[in-house]
Length: 160
Image (cartoon, rainbow, N blue to C red; front, side, top):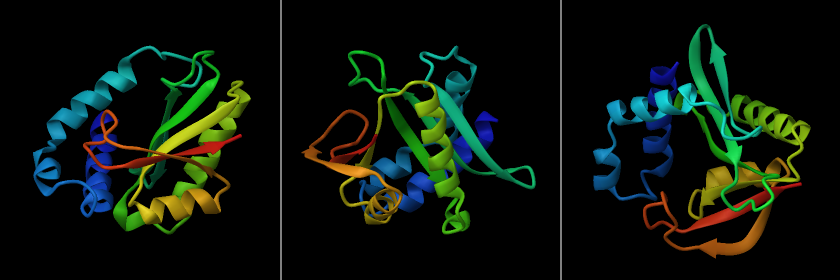
């Protein structure tokens, strides 16, 4: 359900990143553009064995999702990336994120990923603490102004 995922994604981004990303940038995000992006992702053939969207639902409502793909940093195509993990703001702290994260990692390793990486905003302390509590290890490099991060520093995490 592209609309359900897009709605949750947009709400989560606005809640989680309001202190990290510029207010005018967040205000410019539209549900229509996110629905279109999610329709394309869901309808496109998988670009790798790691391409996967995992959705968590309660009573037919989407409450979280994880989106995985091959990492653009992977020369050998065995490096997977957890591209996005979002839980509805009102559903956080209920184990949904942990379940999505564990499910995604299990599926990626079962499909022969050598490692999994993810990126988090440097200032997204709640997410960073969550990743560290669940066994992800930070890479010491912090990257400034990467694509799709809108000028906010990000840090990389690994799971092997």
